[in-house]
Image (cartoon, rainbow, N blue to C red; front, side, top):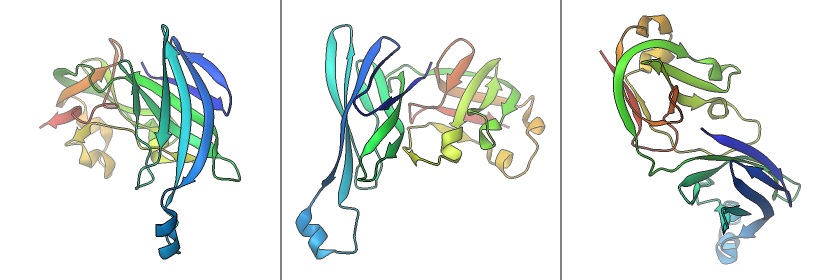
Length: 208
């Protein structure tokens, strides 16, 4: 299962056996000389968010840092992914509140199965938390609401692929997909729930 926690600066919380502290946030200038040459380019400032995470006596410092495309990558601790999924900035551009998500590692074994589609949930497009397709009584999450719209800064996570479902998003009724066969290669969250989130190799493929 995915676990989520929101921390303010200098705050510590426990989640799923982990102790996480939000230590500091700074905005740093990457290359002052380059900025001086290209005065109109403001992309040479990056945000750094520092955390401390510990579990079972092991402690590690994690630093989330914007890359050149303004994205912040997921980080790893033990066999878990730690994803920064959103943050709020203060007047100086530093993060003063962050939301983290812990999930299974990219190295977690993917499970492959196939079956008939029995349900499609597109509620994340409006106000629901997730969108999913149910195959063999297993709900397979393929999108989240913050992928659609997030008023705060949004960090793009790693997702697998949804293949062959293009017509589902161009007006075709979802009921027309019911009974069709699909092949899944996904991460299991539980006996009833799987996800495409956390591994680029994951997929859910419609088999006509």
